[in-house]
Length: 314
Image (cartoon, helix red, strand yellow):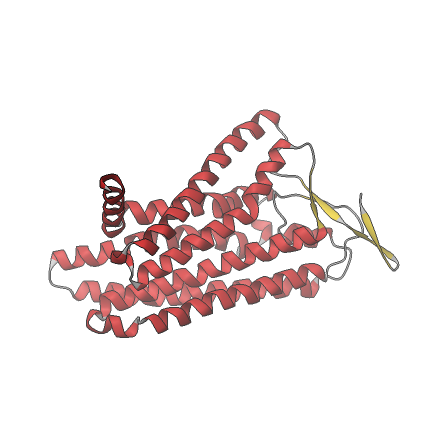
């Protein structure tokens, strides 16, 4: 085990990630499956970003936030998936001490940004349905930029909290992490120092972010539902539901997953269950989001058709 001297202790210089499985056949199957999903994730999200940037029909607040959601999904998946794919190909997958801290911070950054973006999109949906006459004023470019600053600022602060908590831990014994990436919970179990603050502070900040963003989303959808129920025309109700349907699906998938990982007590599930849910959170959801928003959104499908037709006939 590589180690660094640290006074009366021996500080490990890196960690061994045990990954998802040690079955050779299952490793091959998982490698091919996750590689395909990652390529779909990169292609789908980058295509979404480019399409929104080049199509003037999509220069609206909802698509502004959607492009940044696609960026956050790309960052979240790329923080973990390439290293996980390597884990399937090598006998022993190691990650350096500083690399582990960077990966932790990166996951916290993009995961938190996604929470805030989904909350901002819920508020945007509420304004579009409840106050259509003043929507352009309430969701001006200035307001959108401020909400975006809050999202990335909150992500940066949470990433710093998680990274600092990790770097304050002392590791002087086993260095095998029972996960496919550097997750704080199994790292805390390996630490030989006092973990009371290092474990509680990130849990508190992450939990607070989840509570605040879920509250904003819940209040927004309560008002959306009230507004829809007051509508007299069936067509108006259908249009209102279709406006938020994609976002509601994305919110349900994302927050159900992170609630299981970060809020549910660790005693309620095994480490293998945690790994499966983490794969869904970091690999599957980033792949599904562009599909959800493109399949159920006529404006995106229309913009894509126009861009393809322009390329073909030019």
